[in-house]
Image (tube, rainbow, N blue to C red; front, top):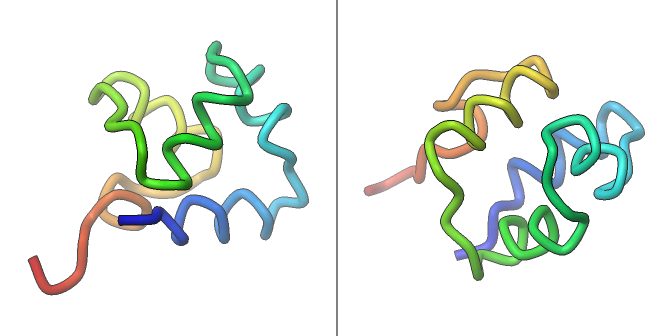
Length: 66
């Protein structure tokens, strides 16, 4: 399942995948794979992404209807 909430939160801050990746210490490809739903990040990475974007884990990673 694609993570459109991550992409939207990143875009709302006018942040590229590369910029987010650098901020959290991963590659741009990793961010792209998370957004495409092809990679499940560790909890530590999820928290780092949320802190960088100013969001909560629920905002970005909670799947509605699950």
